[in-house]
Image (cartoon, rainbow, N blue to C red; front, side, top):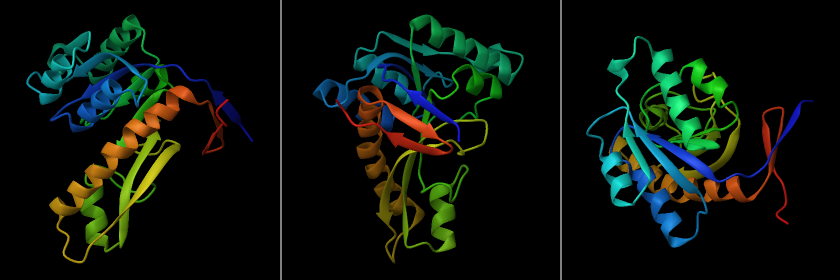
Length: 212
């Protein structure tokens, strides 16, 4: 069975498209000393994304809007993002509400080093509306998943999960709000482990190594 060990490194780039709520909690955790990552770069594909304002207010050194319309293809845009991330010296790429599907060019360039949070318990309810799909299906427990990104949509190895009960009177909005609360707890905690512990990937399993 194939196994790969991943050693901790702490420089990260965050890619975000919208309000930046997960970016905010990551930066807050960094400021509080509970998440020892070095957020060197925040990139957005949206010029007026609130995430950019949050990053600037927090003093992130490099905060950049990269316009997809300036590139002939999705692959060309992703290649430009790769080059910028590499130039700044980031070991990890953290997706925080990034709404573009990454091309294989990007995923392969940072193979095993791209992290995402999904608002459902993978492998169930992949795709853009994990919250709504879970609610429509009638599950009694949903939640969120932090996972590595590969070429399959929401298909990479799972780093961590947190369960959230589905209440009888839940709407998509109320369930999503509680799942976001779980994300805001799980994402910084998983990033903390990512940069302080080695882990082994055995098949699809992520096996965290004991801390020294």
